[in-house]
Image 1 (tube, rainbow, N blue to C red):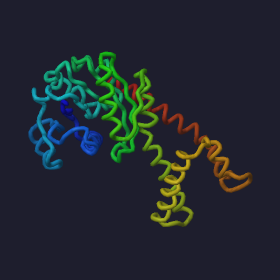
Image 2: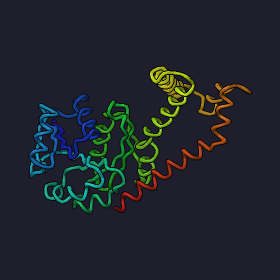
Image 3: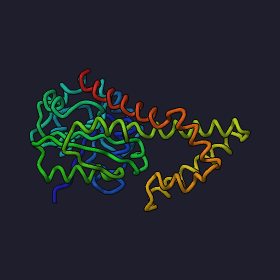
Image 4: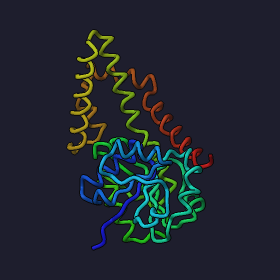
Length: 270
């Protein structure tokens, strides 16, 4: 059985989250996982930071790998595309986790047809992420399943036939952790204003969020029913919810998510 070989271009937090997950689940051998640096000094830094993993600049040897994971920042794609285009081979699959750059542009600038586009989120660092992904029509079904297995190593994945929905994935789950942290931060600050120390406010809020998530994930009740179970008539929770509604909190959150989707769409044109 042929050993899977993966090259990763862009070895920041998200690129390395995928690399570590691939290794953890034995989806690739250490010797078959290549970290690609921009230049020799960058390769040396990668070698120091990740001892035991092969590193290289973008050379013809990249063409021998089955999968190339493209994890650079979207604004850097134009700079790396020319070099990558020179070494890609027809049988390889390119998986992009760059926000906003559509499959058609990837195919055009890389002169390569077998392209998938994926949008993970930062909980992938813990193996608890969610990744939406789409594929060019040219990608073989066997390759599609192979990439799906790789993505699932960082949590869960969902395949979307309509690539345009990936901008919505970016807005909802890609950026979603930041919305959650924003709300947690606001609750912690409110707790401090009520007299708690920073550490006590943090403990109260974090454990509440953790427990609420598990209850939501295991309960057969929908969010409205779970809210109603906490918010007794004339009680404290109802008073808080009244303020949230008066301040249009739900509408503000929705507007923010739509703004994120709009920005993801803009990135495709830049």
